[in-house]
Length: 101
Ligand SMILES: [Zn+2]
Image (cartoon, rainbow, N blue to C red):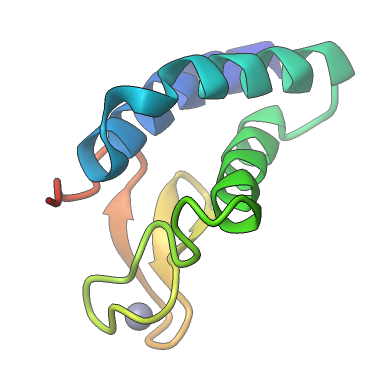
């Protein structure tokens, strides 16, 4: 479980830094600490979902990470990759989102 989280954390950090900048590194570490303390299965997935939810809820970016095919909806994380649900395809592996801005 914790290995899952340890693998996901640096990749998620990279994707956030590439798309939103370096501002959120500590925030993501803090959310990771919270998730780690819960000791739930699929902790890596929960970390990604919690960070994404935070960006949506706080209006940092309501469509983060924006789908590069459609631009108007977020990608959703599943099985180590970011998915466009409209086309049903994996757009990028976690940690390999194209940099923007
Ligand atoms: Zn899409």
